[in-house]
Length: 294
Ligand SMILES: Nc1ncnc2c1ncn2[C@@H]1O[C@H](COP(=O)(O)OP(=O)(O)OP(=O)(O)O)[C@@H](O)[C@H]1O
Image (cartoon, rainbow, N blue to C red; front, top):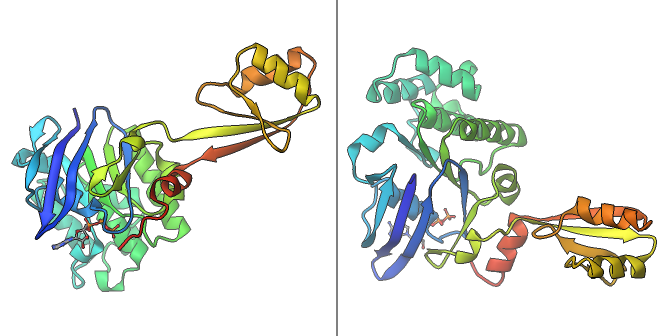
């Protein structure tokens, strides 16, 4: 098991921020943590990395108790860029991390190349743009090839080129077997990164988020709608005809190819196929509409 969070509860004064967070990750994957401002995402990350105490519950990471100091080498946490020192250079930061991790200097150059920041390695942070800071944080987080990477809003405010670059690196890390838990409000970007989204609401991870929210809906325009409908019903396909006289179904149980070939076998022509992806944004609106963030 890579992550086990069991009934985690945390309160600040009288306010319960985490009210029984529960989830498990049993194979390397990218998991997105999504929720309105103040829903407790940063609090959860801080508890998982032992930066913050909690009231009750249990956390195990990589089969070890979360307080086990040996986890330090295998887990990285990309936090807010306020942790960077304005007067130091990117190289200084990476040098510090590599010394703590007992890594050779060659790792600094290697990771700088990987995130594309060789040109500004010797610049001070005060001259850095937001994108450059995020790249440095990423380099610091991945320099030791962590097995688990926690990322708190790493793509907020990035321009498209930096966001694409960040996405490319995260997908590469995932291919290499790193598990990534990433919080973000950028739902388009999340859709590009993963299908596994944990929606946080009222201090919990919603049960619904664990279900397959990520479906495609198909809308077929055919030349003989009544006949098409009859054939599909005869063959027990769960489809309906909508107000626009299109055949409508989702891809949970029905394959587009099967439907098209069945219709073709009966000489029905599919004139147009429209596909709508029910992505993170739609699911977010369904779950949070009417909810005020702070
Ligand atoms: N040190 C603290 N003392 C008291 N309340 C706090 C403290 N830190 C956070 N909170 C409160 O805990 C709640 C959760 O905050 P948290 O930063 O975990 O949310 P978040 O989901 O990460 O929000 P965002 O999307 O805005 O980053 C908020 O209501 C916040 O005001």
